[in-house]
Image (tube, rainbow, N blue to C red):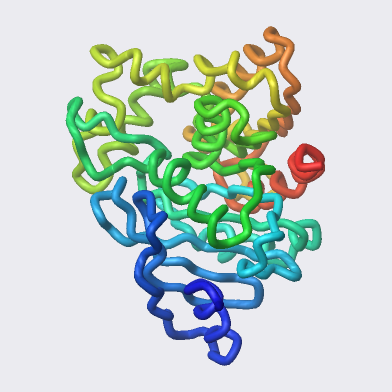
Length: 320
């Protein structure tokens, strides 16, 4: 007898894919998250609507870029997986909408997972003044979504992670905070050392305050909750990144080949300094770190698409 997921996929084969398909009731092994709808949005692209306990019962989207021959109803299939994380002000569609990731030949043999992470969720379980809250993004991704994908959608135990900006920080944090979960990590223009300077802290607090949020809700006050900040700062987690290859890239904020001549970008300049600090720390620890600090370049998708391609040999090599 076919599983609920198999029945959904069978329906998709005869549908245009423009209407979300309600999923069957959660199975007995539900562990905090369940798929409530599934939609084929393009060739090899499937959107899941997932209800998450970690997010207070909210429903959020996850986009899968599926491999050739993908059949989640086949229990023998366990595909190597690339988690591809979006940045602040983006969403789960950003990578497929703004880059050529869906047309990249090297990605036809693995499952690419692009989860929603909130407009400014920062891949974190929010401190929230020390109390419970419904902004538990880390738990949603790694404790709820990951096992769900492995049970029902063919994701295997071989995983790598990459992301840009907020997602670059997320990729480094996830790899460091969960040793052994990811075999490699890549960060493109990521916030790699948010405690690097007062400017860095103020800039991140500004992002935290978007949409009227109290910035202290995310990691607490950077002085009073310094330990919480360090637990989410890749520089202070560097020793946990020494067992896997790491790729870091960033510009210096000056006008590069994809920018308006004569302009500068303070955000990229700040992140550039942070990445250099993290790279130096990793090198001092003997880590396997590859850097591309390419000089002129600002905070733009054209660079991140290029850097994803540049990092793929390292990422895919770690999956062998």
